[in-house]
Image (cartoon, rainbow, N blue to C red; front, side, top):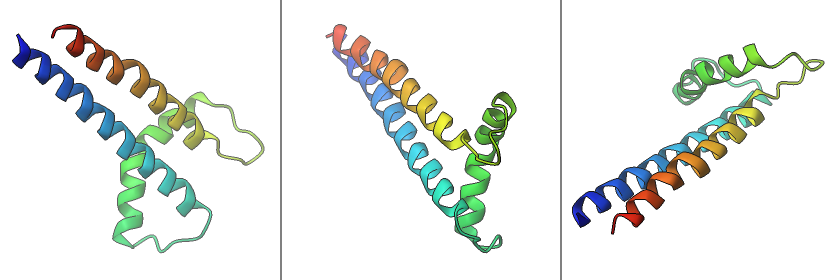
Length: 98
């Protein structure tokens, strides 16, 4: 049973790290948006391609606020919530199996 427990804890840990890395990518995208970066730069293109689907979904839900884009903040709050609820619940469940 301990193998299953460790496997579940590992899945929760990997999910936690993936969500944290994605939060850093969203922060980098928000910082990049304050300047006018070269749109052909591979790093800028990666940041836009990695975050635009999620940010577009949040923008559809949010009403516009006088030209200020709050979608990265809302996305980061949602990612933090998912991290605290889902990833931590998976880890806690794995610990309870031991």
